[in-house]
Image (cartoon, rainbow, N blue to C red; front, side, top):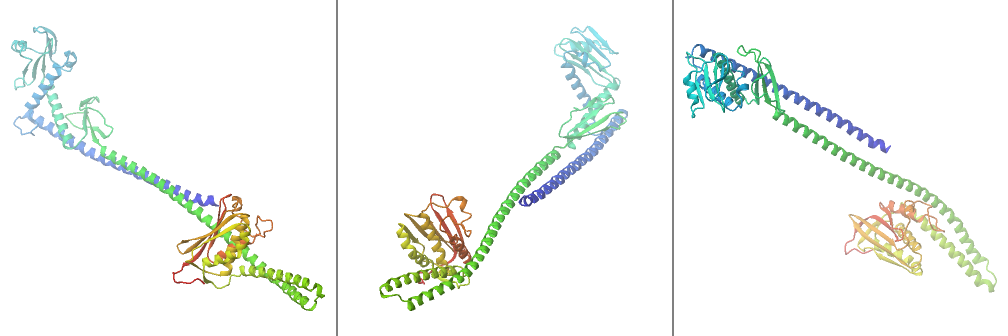
Length: 524
């Protein structure tokens, strides 16, 4: 049954945890998908903007070729682009160890030795002596002829380490280079303006025409046909940085995991607390059930004992009356009269003692007596006085260290019976030589009375049984003293517990509602 009670909150927490984990995972996945859609929409818009910019500037380039007087955007300065082309070509060829691979894409090329003697030729290129002589000079590294109306191509001669390189770019080759450089400028400007991570242009064969062509892990790409009449079958790839989105998703995942961990820890703590409270409640309930069962048994025992005591008193009264008649009406001869009277006095005294014991027993079972205020120290002192002679014979010292300022609302005679039983148990447990201490302490509005003896203590296995009636370890004991004391303390709204270390003595702690007396109040 207890396992089922603990299993239910565990199962409930498990279901709750799984639902939260599934819901959170779905929400994160939906958020990630929505962010990717937003980035793709943004990439689509940027693609259209860059494509439109490229197409528009290519239109301007065509107009320039047809009519140089057309007003164009600032960056469409053909002369500036031609100069940039010359600089790049010079840098490209002057840094190569062999011109073969570098000039393979050119149509008109001539290679000569340091003296100007032709080594190889490709296409139709003419190098006049003027330009050759200029390049042969020590202080010249290149000769250039910029495009003109009569000669629209670009001619260059470059002095290499051990050769001379001449090439003549046709108008078509030059236009292609101009297109590339213009597109490069457009791509760079648009990438900077629109905060695009990278733009790569691919030709019809899928080769990189412009751009690095590198893919970043933190970038979202969109690759589509360029759809330009100036660049047929070309395609463009736009990379948009999704670092912010990725960081957001990562932080969301981390926060969600932390939330789940916190939930697990909170759930574990809650279940542990429930377990502790359940166990504490079960122990308290078990203790209450034991108390109720014991009280019922004690009440039944008290009723039975009360009936038996009444039945015992009747024959005792009859015996007492008979003894009085014997003493009055059946007097023996004079020489036996003294011994006869002495014998009858002994019998009558024992009958009175038995009757007194029955009276005290009946008194201990009466719960309907009026509660009166009595001094705790005085009650204990009366009991100690009753037992002092017995204790002295066993060389046992009883120390009454209770406070004189503590008063109890109690039934005095019944409470005396409690202390009598406990102190008597201590005397019998010690046997010969020792001491018993009775002390008090205040806890809120309760008085705690500790009766501690120096006897052998109570065995651990017997601690849970000492308040059960008929349980005793004494040869002639009846096992009624402690159960009756327990019942009396409970009737006073208190509690009694035993504390014992085997071999170091036993102690009984009685907790009772109390009131602290003022200094001027007199003990009853």
